[in-house]
Image (cartoon, rainbow, N blue to C red):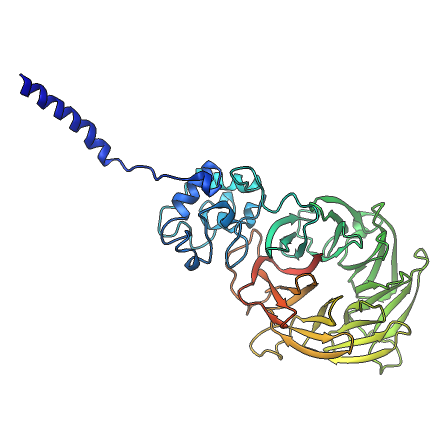
Length: 496
C-alpha cells in the first residue's frame, strides 16, 4: 500500500514537471535600465536589440545603431536620427519595421532582419508612441525643454517640411510641416529675425510668407502676398528682412518680377511693387543702414538697387555688375543669382551664374572691386562673421571634380582671393555658417540622377537629399557625417 501511494506521488510530480520543462520562458527584461515604456521596451529588447543586430556587441556592424536603451536609440546611427519625435513618417525605426503600407512608409530590408516581421499591433504601438513624442519611460521627450537651443533649419522643397537639427548633437530632432495648401508649395528661402525669436520662409509655388517661433518652432501666422489669393500666387524665391526686424521684402521670381513689402509685426502685406521693369527678380538683401534693397535679376548683366527710405514710393537704379558693360541689358550674360554683404558692410558679393564668377562691389559707390572665378553655376552664399571666409555653392559644377556634380568654393572675403574648393555632395545648394562650432552646413539636393542612392524612401515622392558638414579649421568635409533628409533639401539657416 505504501509503495502504491509512493508511485502515485512520483507520477503526479512528473505530470507537473514535464509540461513546465517544455515551456519556453519569457526573457527577463530590465525595462527600468533600458528606459523604454513597457510596450516599446518589449519590442525593442526582444526583436531589435538582440545578438547579431542592434545590441552593444553588434551595433557597429548594424549601421552604428544601438537599441539597448532609449538614450542610445536617440543617439541615432551613421545616417542620422532614427526616431523623430511626433513624426513616424520620418522615423527610420518605424519605416524599416513597418510592413503595412496603410500605416505609413515601408523600408527594405524589412526588420527584424531574418525574423518574423512585427505584428500589426506592434507596428501600431510603435507608430502611436512616436507620434506622441517617443517619450522615455519617465516621460522625457528628446530635444525638448530648452527654448534657447541652438539649431539648424533646412527646407525640404519636395515634401513641404522643414527639418530642424539640434546643433549640439548634429542630429535632426523635428520635422515641421509647413505651407497652407494641400498641393506641394516648395518651401524655398528661410530667414531668421534679427532678434533670433522667429524664423520665416517663403514658397516657390505658393502665395504666403510664414512665421514660426524659434523657441519651440510653433506656427505664428502667414502673410498673403497680394490683394487676394489669386493675385498672391507666384514663385516667391527669396526675401530680405529690414535691420530692425519690422518689415520684409519678398521677391517673386517670375518673368515679370514682383516685390511684396510686408509688415512682420502686423502680419500684413502693405504693397506689391509690380512693374514691367522687373525681370526674373531673385536674390535680395537690405543694406546694413536699412536704406537700400538690392535685388538680383537672373537674366541680365545688372542688379536692382531700390531706395526704400520711403517704402510706399520706392525708386530704383540698375547696377551693372561686370565692370565692362556700359548699358544695363536683360540679355542673358551675367545672370546674377544671389547677393550678400560683407560683415563690415563695406562691400557686397554677387554670384554670376552665367559667367561662373563672384563679382565684388563697393557698397559706397556700387563700383566693381574684384572678379573671382569659381565653379560652374554658382548659387548661394554663406559668410563667417569671425573668420574671413565666404562659401559659395556651385550646384551644377561638373568640371572642378570630374565625374561628380557640384562644388563648394571658399573665398577670403577680406582680400577677395580664392582659397580653394571642396566636394560636399551631389548638387549642393543651401549653405550656412555656424561660427560657434566652426562648421559650414551644406544642403545637397541630390535631385537629378547621378547622386548616392538614398538609405530609405520618403513620405512623399522623390529622392531624398542630404546634409554634409565642412570643418572651417581644415576646410574639408567631415567624413561619415552625411545626414539624409527628406526630398530636395534646399536652404539652410543657423539659429546661433
